[in-house]
Figure (cartoon, rainbow, N blue to C red):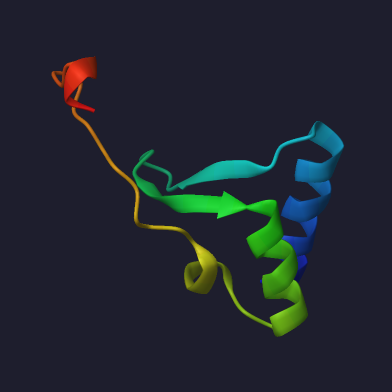
Length: 68
């Protein structure tokens, strides 16, 4: 997984992206990954599930913007 995180870091740097959504093959959201968290994870030997931000708000397609 370390090589995977390194690859993600390089791609994020190349594209100028600071965070990405992590989804599975069914497009279910599992969390948000920041480049800073990925860099620190490589240094600390952590894996992707350990560093995903999972404390985010979600909404359904029927949710009004005013409710967010």
